[in-house]
Structures are given as C-alpha cells and as structure tokens.
Image (cartoon, rainbow, N blue to C red; front, side):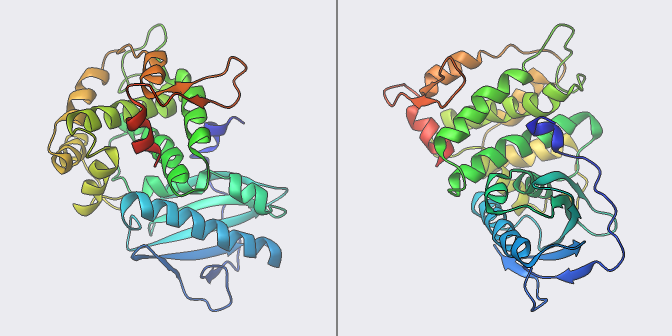
Length: 305
C-alpha cells in the first residue's frame, strides 16, 4: 500500500490478556511526557528487543507532538499496539470508544530502522489534537494529520528538512483537483482527502505567516484550538474549529481559505509555491535542494524549523 493509504485502517481486535503497561517497561506506570500520560496496551508476543525499540519510538513520537503543540494533545490517552507478522507499523486508528485511544499493528520483527522511519504514530497523535468534525470535513482532519506529522517529525529531528520538503513536493500533486471536482467538502477521493487537505494546510500556514510578517503560523492556530479544550474527545462544528483557530492568530485566514476551497476546485500552482519557498525538485524525483535566495526561503525555514 502507498504511504498515506495506511492511515485509518481498522485496528485488529486486541486479544485476551492485553496488559496495561507503561513505556514498555516493567514498572507499569504510564509514560508521562508533555504534561500528559500515555497508557500503553500491548497485545501479542513482542520480543524484549522489540519492546525496547518500541519504547524509544513511542517516546520520540510523543515528543515530536508535544514540541509542535506545546504539550500532549490530551491529559491521558491509551496507545493500543497489536502484534502482527513481519516488520513495520501496518496501520493506525484514532477513536474514543470507550476511552480516547490510538491504535496500530506492529510487526513482531520490527527493528530500530523501521521504527525510525515510521510516520503512522505521529500522524494518529495529530488526530488526537483535533476535535471530531463533521464527516464532510474528513479531508481537514486527514489533511492536518498528513501535513503536521511531516512538519513535526522534521522539527523534532526525526527526519530532515530535505525529507520534509521532498515528501510534501512529491505528495501534494496527488491532492490537486481533477476533472469533475466539486471542492474539498464534496469530493471524497483518497487524493483530495489526504493530500488535498494537506494543500489546504500549507496554504493556510503561508497565509498566516504572510499576514503576521512571519511571527505566527498554523502551529499557533492549532495550539489555540488545544488551549480552548479542542481535541478528539470533543465534537466541534467546522465553524467553531476555524473560528477558534483564526482567533488564536488574530486573523481570518483559515475561514477565508475554507470558503474558497470547500465547494469549488480552487486552482493551486504548486510549482510556483516551491519556487517561492526555494524548494528545487530534481527531475528524477530524488532529494530536493534549497535555493536560499528565493523570496520565501525564510518562510520555508520557519515552517521546517
């Protein structure tokens, strides 16, 4: 499966005997980080070596989220990990039945390299930081998770700035409107849901930064939502979410952009955006290069940390 197609897959049921652990260590106490707690439930026969690497992976992912949002997105949530054959993190889900939780399937043979390369856990933790929105705005939830996960991992040093902009510049063309598109609220294809939503987030980030002379960005807008009590444990209208986010940065950038993109296929010139930011793509699709003389090079650095 392709990278973003793994998200939101149904989590395999936890088998009997799942133990409430903490930080994958024998003490049994929850992992405390960023002002919150993560209670880990492991189901299946993970090796001691895998548990050790799993602990580092969870801590690293939670730290990336806490750095971006200023704290963990909920005072407490569960992390339910189910053993699966092979290597790698196979999928993720965020839900709140009966308690707020993130779940994923993890290969029993997963090692340090696969955990370091994983994006799924950070992606799902971003979902925890956003209130549950109406189904028509699934693209906003998934777009935020796709965009913020990529940025947060780079800012935390898990990935590089080069990888951040390579992923965005390679992925976002899949989110551009196609023939018959009726806007983000009414076009529910995979590309528009994940990468179309991510395009919205990049445009919003740039609009906020331009309007604030670079002092604020999407990060501060989302921190405002969290400070107002908004996370996945709450049901919010889209108008409330956008209004609270806008108020946090003293603008109407998000609401204005939503009006433009919700029910019509707004054209977006991604190539022009990359030129402005100084992101130079190689013809072979390999590593990107940076043009620090580009007019928006400072914005690029501000987004990527």
